[in-house]
Image 1 (cartoon, rainbow, N blue to C red):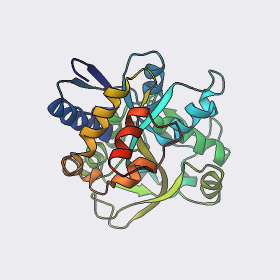
Image 2 (spheres, one colour):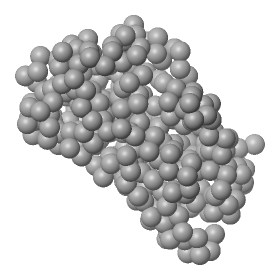
Image 3 (cartoon, rainbow, N blue to C red):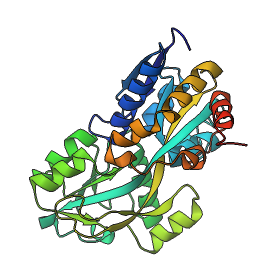
Length: 296
């Protein structure tokens, strides 16, 4: 992997993807003579688009949108499957997080209609996942006023009264969510019910999840929701040597990654080889996983 330059697409500057990309690059750059750069982006769909057109070498992507890109389904039905997509490994769980300003009157998912809700910027995975939830609930575009603020602007918009609720698919704890909970009284809204249960049962890449209690102000109890897994993907353009070196660097320094952010504390090497990976494993990743006894 000598003299290679690696660009990893992340997400918002206030998201866990940003932290993950920077730590991965620091590990890879320190273990090899590779130049690794973590690049902020619009999120999962933006990253997949940039991977497709070789603007990135690897990227962090929600497992649901990795699945759809691999299958050519949902938002990829028109453009077709990304047959070049390859998995490297998975990371942390990402629960769909719905936060409402306390004076909005929103206490359940069914209270959203008629309000102003920031569902995220175009190109973000959490916006795309929220749109799937809206379909499952039978909500059309006019059920509520949907705004498209990026993650770094949504906490201020919530507390300034510009929106009533925000949606964020993210690992916890998260700085943007913390900002919102500290700047104004908020309520963490459960994302559950029959429509959510059906959405989970119909899509294997979704799973029930809980946001642990006492992480943020105003959230003493666990909050029920559903979620996905963050994954690192690339394409078949990345050389076997480069993929091997990247994966080996991360897994041999897994303790450093786990200590870099509370969202990564629960990472498990065996789960990282298995969970949320719909695209075929890159040959370089397979080579290291077999050497490490993580894959037969």
